[in-house]
Length: 214
Image 1 (spheres, rainbow, N blue to C red):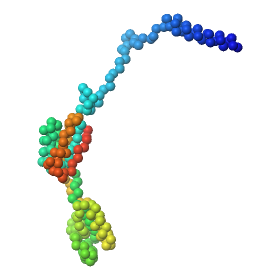
Image 2 (image 1 turned 90 degrees about the vertical axis):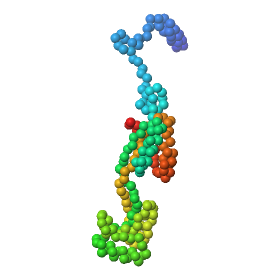
Image 3 (image 1 turned 30 degrees about the horizontal axis):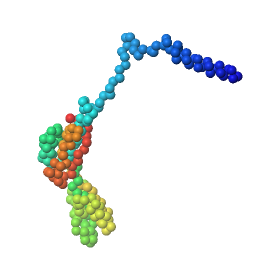
Image 4 (image 1 turned 45 degrees about the horizontal axis):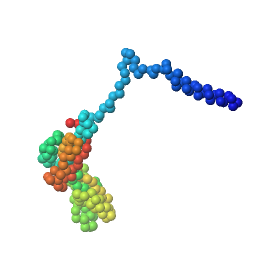
């Protein structure tokens, strides 16, 4: 048994020596190309359109800035952006503006019924009341308008405490506002917020990133 094991070990050693010397003399690696067929070439990855063709920096970022209640103000800011060397586009938008919040009692079946409720309201020393004459709230009783939603909510809760089913609703109207869209090269950083504060320190505007389309 020992003789067989020794023979196998010697055989493996001799085969290893032969395979790495005489066995490789006639071996030729396969060719990477074949006549008549084009060879495979590795392509460099393409850069996205958001990058410069000569480097890895971003070409530009685009923003929409606003809203402006006045077209004159919007155009004034747009000129500053143009003077900074950037392209702009002025966009108009229709939006709903909240004027105030109305506290009221729901419309009654007739004006006479509403007047009877008003007489009862006076007993609680409520001074701000009015019967609405026309529109979807005809014969409802208005109990005050408030610029602040929280104040309207508190007043309606007080009226309900007195025993009346008071409600509140936002009164709105359609208005036109203006936005400035502009294309800003990477690291340009036009100081649009500072320019806006110089014109109107109380204005509420936003600089919002957007997809570049011009």
